[in-house]
Length: 342
Image 1 (cartoon, rainbow, N blue to C red):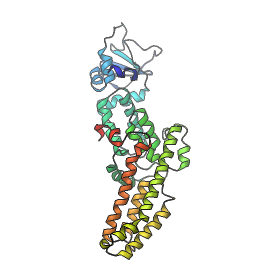
Image 2 (cartoon, rainbow, N blue to C red):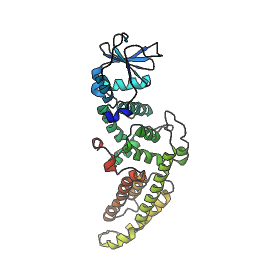
Image 3 (cartoon, rainbow, N blue to C red):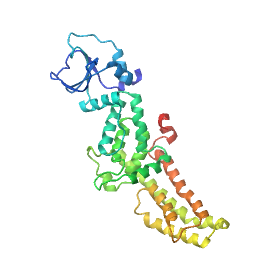
Image 4 (cartoon, rainbow, N blue to C red):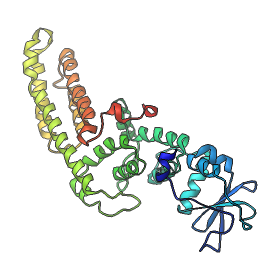
């Protein structure tokens, strides 16, 4: 633990009122049988040392250090002054005692979860922090197997014209959170979501607001790098469709209706060429190409050729997903994602 002391929040233990804060307001939670009073900017919370020590490495170490008692105290209880905002400390304490509601109905849900995540990281509350991380990867995937579920949730959840689609928060907020809590494994998909946004939206994020995180110059560079990778990957997918004549003629004995299949794939190529300039999301581009073939009534290829082609979008999706962390200068997914989140 000694190596981590320089990362911990500044705590001051005293038995009297904190200096320069003569008036203290009681906040919630306030337990009458509590053994310590935490004070943040004039708001006091009475809780139990044992609960804090059991759930937080920072408080565990703090309470393990003997303190000299002074004749002053707050209602006969030890006092610890913290530098947090009162509402942030309150959310953290409530989560320690009652748990946290993990859901994504709106922006407020994410902001509440993100705030507790920052506090659990700051105070090294490992169990609660891991619970939050395991939830975050359900709304910000770190495994390509989760992509279908993620896109399914996005499509099935209603959105208004003026709100973010599911999970109802802007990806810049996830980038900010991942950096704050040192969770690099959350960055690739957050940058991915950012990179498929219109350019005007990316470059307009210069001021922090509750609904938007501030992007740095480094963030902008990362996004541009991903956009270039997306263009290359979608072009490769189109090239794969263009090469369909080669492998189909090679395996013509497996094709059931060769002329119709050739016409179907020519239609697919025309569709992809038309969609390519407009589709910013390469994963959707791959999916839409396959859906076009499968849903075509007039020119659907035979089962054999369709089976062959299904491997193309899957291949490009896997390769793009595999390359995401490295494109951002991060470790491979296998090393990037902690064991408890795999």
